[in-house]
Image (cartoon, rainbow, N blue to C red; front, side, top):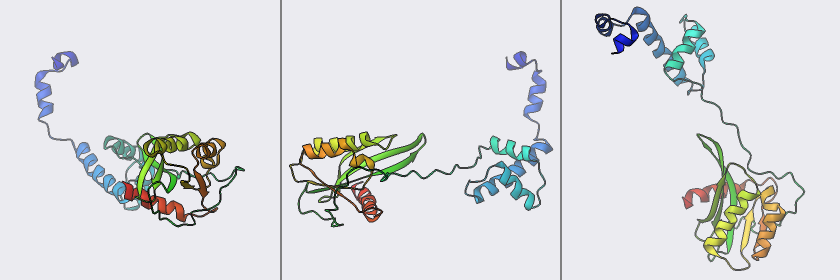
Length: 220
């Protein structure tokens, strides 16, 4: 049926099927092997222009378009460098809470001290922001939320999740960085309504964030 549709003789089709690869096809396969080796050596960061340059430097004479065609056929492409996404925006005029925690990452009872932070995760669809609150007593995540936007809504969703799960009494210490979501009116109001005491790290202090990263691993 395919031969009739394509107007090809059956004998011609079977002759093509049993024919050995042409010299051009063999040369392409050999060249593709070299291209794949250069691409792998670059940790998959080279596109066709840089691969072509490396081949030229090593003595392989080949056209740019041919390199680009073979890379496309083999599914080889330059890995895009992911842009760094800043998770803390401290350039604002909102009120800053004092640092009551003072790097004392210990608690004698549950729901005594919660620490919170936001991290960004690269996915196949782009960046995803994850906000989490961790109880220092058990080093466990008590609330979390994820979103495409790092904003007050994300922080509040994580906080509300934790409040629903744990329902802490007044006096709980809530420690965060100086990011605008945590200093916003809505977030500070949500803490005040539940009698939660706000604490924030010093400006430019990365140690609290590093500790949060370790806690993420422990909680997982």
